[in-house]
Amino acid sequence: MKIFVIGAGGFIGSSILDHLLNSGHTVEGHIRSEAGNLTETSLPADVDVFVNAAGKLGVSGVDTAELTNSNSTLPVLLADFCDDHQIHLIHLSTPGVSGLHSDVKEDAPYDPWGEYEKTKADGEILLLKHPLNLKNMITILRPDFVYGPGDMHKLELFNQVQKGWFPVIGLHGASIRPTYCADVCRAVETSLPGGCLSGGLYNIGGPEVLKFRDFILKTALSMDIKLKILPIPRLFFHLALKLGPLCPGKLSESKYKLFGTDHYVSISRAMETGFYPECDIKKGISKTVSWYRENGILP
Image (cartoon, rainbow, N blue to C red):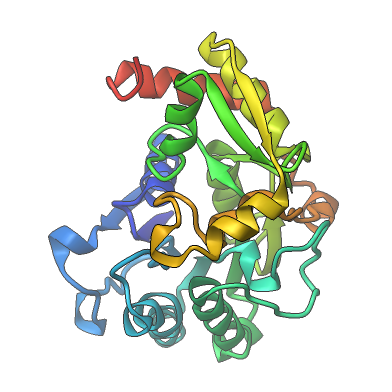
């Protein structure tokens, strides 16, 4: 198939592009920093599928307008174009649109916990109402806690493990469902027309739910690091956050919620179609650490 990947310069987008190419598809990618912003005139009409892996994270320096443009407005622009040219659309969203809860299913009410998640939720809602979706030509995937080779957002976790000690909120930290990037790529390929995930809304997650502490310990084992876990009482984090400008630089309300509150998706709907995650935690972490070291990012 001929596929156009939006957000091909990012970690997940580039992984998807490489996976689809290796699977024999004809793939073109759009990288915003190199090709500029997408407009209707810059979109190709002679393709079978658009994959939207673009998105703007709610980090320092990014305002609400940027978040809205990337996470809410762009998906609708793509859906409008796809509807005009009979192109299927695969859109990558986030489980954060349903909040920080345990065993979240796709039909859970929207409860976004941050500006990024709110704008992604707005984009989802608009796509679900779109005429293209009524034709069963939109697939929305919500990949959970994605990691893998090329991921620079979670490098901070691996760097902290390298130091030989790691702070954890409470005794064990949050329950999470880590998802290796190759399983997300497989989910995208399975969402192509004729695939078992084609059309609909699906959570995508790894095979195991575990405590954040255990994820970090497995990471240390793969790195051959003797790690000391430092359980930090939740009250300490609450007090530190109240220090305002004196609060430690790497501590934030969002990190407290993300690593201290149980949040993971149910993947039963995808499994009922026949899609199962293939990469276990040990294998995924080992491949990720190897990539960091091969590229001189970790010693």
